[in-house]
Amino acid sequence: MTTPFYGPDYSELQQFDPEIADVLVDELERIRGGLQLIASENMSSPSVITALGSTLTNKYAEGYPGRRYYGGCEVVDVAENLAIERCKALFDADHANVQPHSGASANQAVYGAFMKPGETLLAMALPMGGHLTHGTKVSFSGKWFDAVHYGVDKETENIDYDEVERLAKEHRPKVICAGGSAIPRLIDFEFFRNLADEVGAIFWVDAAHFIGLVAGKAIPSPVPYADVVTFTTHKVLRGPRSGALVCREEHAKALDKAVFPMMQGGPQMHTVAAKAVNFKECASPEYADYAKQVIANAQQLATSLGDKGIRPTTGGTDTHLSLHDLQGIGVTGAEAEERADAAGIVLNKNAIPFDPQKPNVASGIRVGAPCVTTQGMGTEEMKTIAELIHTAITEGDGTREHPAAVKVRGEVTDLVTRFPAYPHSAQV
Ligand SMILES: *Cc1c(COP(=O)(O)O)cnc(C)c1O
Image (cartoon, rainbow, N blue to C red; front, side, top):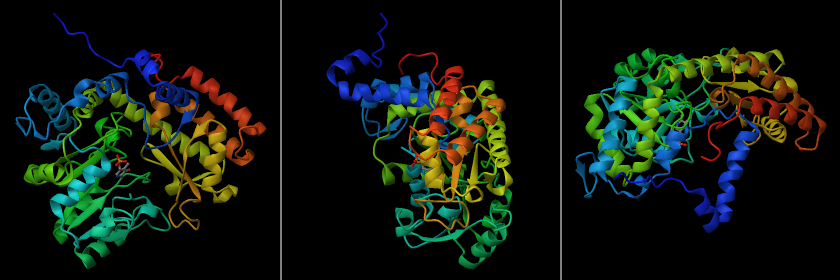
């Protein structure tokens, strides 16, 4: 006898908890109804979401496959072993840990494995494109560790490698980190590797944003260079909301111990299974095509926005995102975010390098192509989207009633009708 699958049952939820049932549908309608340009978001597949909505959520599995603190783990062990093997194969890595609950949790494991409180980290500054977990004062990483930050060059707006080298030699950090949340350009991993060797540091790449492009073989991989690479699985990669890390064999034990038991309790086995599904998806030729198209689309968006006077920092992008300076059109990041939102375009304000505005106002926006590319849009649609963004943020006033917002929303509706999100399933 085969066991019928106990899957997401919307009608039961609707009866029991109509308020939350409505939230699920409203959110699906929201993402279907607008253009999602937040560079850190994507639309995971129905297969990934099926694994997430499964009874694997119930299982306690502290420990690692074959070495658990609980009985009854023989089934979830299969999922974790598949996730580990697929992850190692995808990134050609010695070792993978698929248990981190998020990108931030994976990063915690790096600190746990390699640093003691008070020791020095060298990483990119948050306002220059880094991340909260790279030693900012509001994060555990800045409270417990001595963070030294590098930025970008004023002219090129790209990583200031001379500054990185100078700071590394001056401060002799325990760990050097490359990666961030608003870096449109490729990173010179070989430079960082050589520098880390010269000053005796661990080289950590936080690939949260761009790992999907690596998985799709669309940009060079940091794995051959870094001691450890941490990442999220829900950005370009298009898996469940979670994290993971890959590392050199020599660091496997220390990092596994740092994930569990140092930083986390039991892994979320439904998410681990969803990561396995995602890694399988990423190994397909379709995903490689997707990753290349994401870059082509991001480059077209950057160019077309630039043509309208919305200048891309660094002059463009090599990845899935671009960062735009709005000072030339006299609009702040906060205004642009609000006006775009009123017109059905979801993007975020973002500090640009050397931003004169406060972070909650900002002089820039960050736009990303992962979602619209998942929906099947190509470079022609990116030209249209750039026009729509320009109209919305230069003519709109932040209200939905403004004629510019109404007009752009109409064109957004045309686009998302031609390229729907989740076209094959009424409910996910
Ligand atoms: C998104 C991101 C993270 C954090 O990921 P969470 O899953 O939100 O914890 C860490 N580092 C970088 C560079 C990121 O962009």
